[in-house]
Length: 395
Image (cartoon, rainbow, N blue to C red; front, top):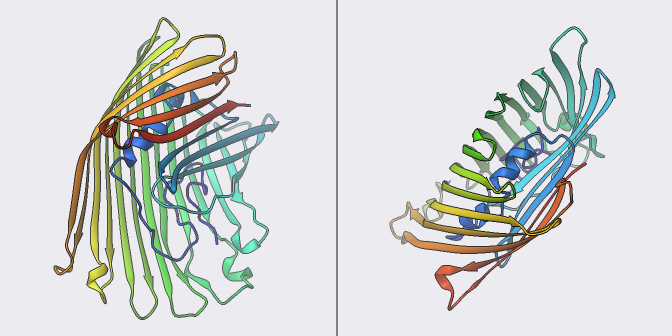
């Protein structure tokens, strides 16, 4: 089965990973501060908008046994002036482990007389039951000034070609995506993505247990360049997921909601150095219900607000260092519906210093960054907070 995280279309942050079970959510109080520090600088994000052939990876330690991981691979090859082929793989793991996705393939046709294209999209698979198939229409040409609609049928042939067991889709999965990106006068850049993973119902091999899933997610980014050296920007990101597992004995349900807003400013100094300032808010909610056992029914909420600053300094033709400071307030609450089970609350000020060293190509098309982080709030008892690495390259 396929509907893996962030792979079915060009972007997908919370699609079903193919496992008929609820997610095991794992966070610590500094998780969102860690994640923000491991992601690419805002200036790198803006440059990445224009890349159609490239790879970038970010990875960093969340705790002893967990790793934040983000991967983005983009390939485009023109066959004729009216036909091109694209490959896209995008994956991010920040709250639950899942299988690595297969890339999405696209065959795009541009009619000579129309300012639009028609695409055949899908993910081929050795087991045909796992193949995805869909269509997309794009008005304009990517990466800018376009409007795109895509429809994908996941596990398109599953009910027809599943010869492993008796499992089947009672309600087949599909995904609808709207995406647009516009820029004006090279000063204003707006990108919007909305994705709807329509309700699915999957009947397991025993013909009794049923897994149900649906999801919506979005991302909106606006950047404003005041002059050749300075940007202001804001990013909004949201996920809503509902899933249910009913084994005929003790049904369970899970509702996940996530919202993030990030406002930032950065400026180039002396045309080489770069200074970034930002404020970010993350709000994560996980509601789990087991009607037959209320001791396992609870509401978990996790919020973080942080201020951060990054200074980037190239000190030679191919080397640079980077310092990052993140200070925030984090709070976790777990409220149990059964009054006999104690609810918990934990909050704390988190402070983190990140030091990094970067090796980059002379033309700035490729770079790899190694970083170490330190707990400023626990310098005496637990000073080292883990390492991270970032890689980016344009083909």
